[in-house]
Every structure is written in C-alpha cells, then in structure tokens.
Image 1 (tube, rainbow, N blue to C red):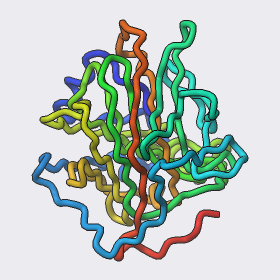
Image 2 (image 1 turned 45 degrees about the horizontal axis):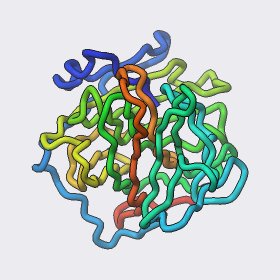
Image 3 (image 1 turned 45 degrees about the vertical axis):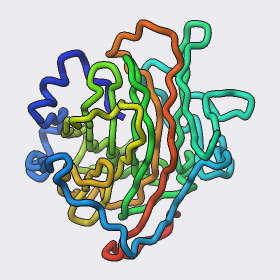
Length: 301
C-alpha cells in the first residue's frame, strides 16, 4: 500500500502527473520509464462484458468466513503489516471491527482509549495458501465512509511475496480513496517491490511505482454503493468504476503471476481528524471471474 497523499498533492494528481519512485541506476529501465497511464473519460468508457465469464471466487458476506493466519477461510486477518494511523485487528466474534449484517461486511474504524483500530482482509495467508489468480476480473462493491482520515482501499499483490523470496513483488492498488481531502478522486497505482532475498538478475532493486488519477464528478463518498474493478490480461491492466473503464496501463511481466485480494479501511494520518465518530466501510461483495479470452489459469500452489 502506498503512503497516504500529503496536503496539496491532489493538485498534482489533478493534472494526472505520473510519479515514479527511485530506481536502481545500474539497471536497464527503459521499459519502466516508458510505462504510462491511458485515461478514459468517466461515463464514456467501455463497459466490462462478463458474458461467458466464469466466476472463480465469490463472497457475499452472508456469514463470516475469516480466519487468522494459518487457519482455514476465504479471508485472513493480521497477515499484512500495518500502515497508516490505525492498528489492524484480528477477526473475533465478540468484537465489532468486522460486522456481518444483512449480507454485508462492515469494517469499522474507531478510537479505543485514544488509539485508532480498524481491519484488513486478504485472500491468502502468510504461506501463500488461499485464493489467487493470474488473469481475470476482480471486483468489490462497497459504500465508503466520508470524512477526514478515512482511507479505504481495494488492491492486489502477487503471492510470490510469500512463496518466492528471490522474485520481484508486485502490488496493484485498484482503488484508494481519501474521504476528507479528496472525496471525488479515484487513485490507482502500480508498484514493484524488490525481492526480500534479491537475485542478481532482478531488474528492480529499489521500489518503483507509478500512479494515475481520475476525478469522479459525482464523488466516491456519496453514501451510495459503487463497484471498483480491475481486469488483468497479458497485455493490459484495465481499471473500472461502476463497470465502466476509466484508465489502463500496459501489463508488465511482473504483473503476470497469481495475485491475491486485499480490502481495508485505513487511517490516513495526512488528513487531520477532529472527531471520534467511528467510520464504517460497508462491503456488499467481492467477486472474481475469468473471461473467455483469458489464458488458461493455473491453480494457486
């Protein structure tokens, strides 16, 4: 997950300036330097066509299916390290951080005795066991909490983070929102992270990332449910809002590996919060499909 945007950075994103982070000077970087975002006008993009698609993962959150690391479930908690100003808690039936009601999951961020807590779910554990997929369409339908410090996100990471420490790791932030400073801004980012045990042949020896921004005229924090989706193919990474394309990047070889799902409500320390009212991110469902023209899938090891 990328660091929260600082005050004033939204103006840079508004011009859709693509930002790259430090790269290893000694490596051939032409393919990364040329990596650009192609934007599609909101409400004028192509609608995703799921005709003939096969659903490979689905959670309508009718009942809890969340385990701690090493357990068995569709989701795992407290596997990913913390970020932001709130501590991510494990799922417990007697705690209200994760609430299951009316076929929806509510992730609650709240202040407990002066300290903020919240939740993150992901579809594999620290051994890489669970759901992951290389190509297809990943989607979350959710209602976002408006107000300063609310930092909801839906994102993907490659399983090799846990299974292949000598490989470059990929992160695709399908969507990040900032409920206080930029309630109309759709922030999308891609990252390559160096291997934990680098192989000399790795191209990326330092973190690399680029972002793209799209302003949503009617806003993302409007109290309504919206669909946040991404399609990954051998050629493209395509981003959708309410199933309409809004931007795309060319795919990189590092993106073409099994990827798992993460969803969370974090606390953005860059946005000053002045109240102690709990914030709720309500997720209706998270689903994944393979499309008829996707390459043959390999099961997650």
